[in-house]
Image (cartoon, rainbow, N blue to C red; front, side, top):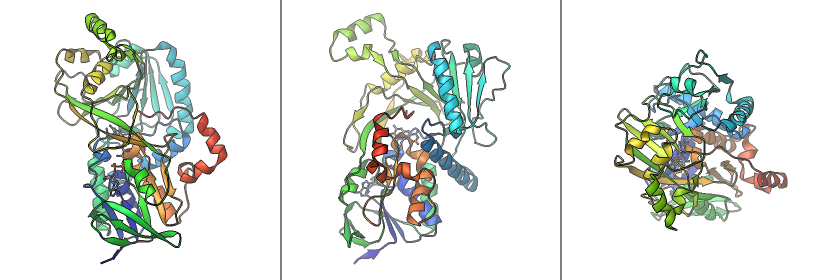
Length: 449
Ligand SMILES: Cc1cc2nc3c(=O)[nH]c(=O)nc-3n(C[C@H](O)[C@H](O)[C@H](O)COP(=O)(O)OP(=O)(O)OC[C@H]3O[C@@H](n4cnc5c(N)ncnc54)[C@H](O)[C@@H]3O)c2cc1C
């Protein structure tokens, strides 16, 4: 028997459930969400669950600011069931030569709309530490703390080498599962349905979407098809003959217990902003350097090791993209058993008491997923080139924080509402613009962790 839907969404990760929520809020009732896995169980289950409005790209900044507005509304209406906090992101450097650049880059981001920048250089400054829970009455913008004494007054666990710390304030973390479940359940109450199946085909008739084939053998008639397939965005695009310009990168994450209390339990997300060599004992370094396979462990590693406390116990999360691995998505993602130790040693540059775990590291829990990215790390949201087909994805390492914002943008396309100023910057059609192509050639850093 052929079923019908007003809209079919392929993928029930955070992006698909946010789309179902937003479209149902706009009054569309017969929405069918299809996923071959349980909702929110693939990439959306692997994230660090953090958010920040601190973006150097003005269009991304506007999108994520709006997304945070929407998340705050959801937190208000739900009694903050997803535990959104505002602890912020703290970018720390020990490199005096970077301070002027950090200050001017921060001023630029502030002027783009991320909120005021306050620079503090003495301990009687007006710096306001973050509250550990909730998001109300928190400062906007960012605080730049200069000088080790001031930094360690508020963050005593950081290295005595730290000379500057930028605290982005409209930032923090939340439970992505609980946000996702809230979006899914609210959408369901408004009529959206979930079906467990793989989308195997999309039929086009008279140059527009007509129906969708499922692995169950069913065909569902629908005039609108939304590709929210996360790392499989490209594969699902091909079902419509569209080659989406995205690639996938493997990203890992490790969790360990922190019985020594190396990371303050009320800490923000802590990010080490400097390159480094990993700390090894002299004999270890010599042995590693001798072997072609391990020499890389003695060479320079990139900036960006980061950590945060997780939950009410003594868990911490550790992340560091010291190698970029572009690959086709496979399930489960391949894990690298060396990752936790490398991340832990890298974090010791910022948190010296990590050394206490060098001899015996608490047993790590390792997982990972994929960043699905466009070349310039902006998302893809909008029409997919076939009448009735839309894409929402390529949300890289910011898919949790952007979900409500990209879903709102998608809904504006579907219901023909006024589009926000950044719509064109995230549309697939941007790549047909020669001026945009030229801009891509000299694209700057996206600030992606
Ligand atoms: C280690 C790591 C840390 C991260 N940290 C953060 C962070 O701190 N903050 C943040 O905002 N983001 C973070 N992210 C990114 C974020 O997790 C992702 O951007 C987001 O989860 C992507 O959601 P999605 O819905 O697009 O994809 P997914 O969650 O992967 O969902 C896609 C769904 O589509 C389904 N699907 C695919 N093809 C088909 C088909 N043919 N038929 C049916 N179903 C199909 C899949 O089964 C899957 O369930 C992180 C990611 C990783 C890996």
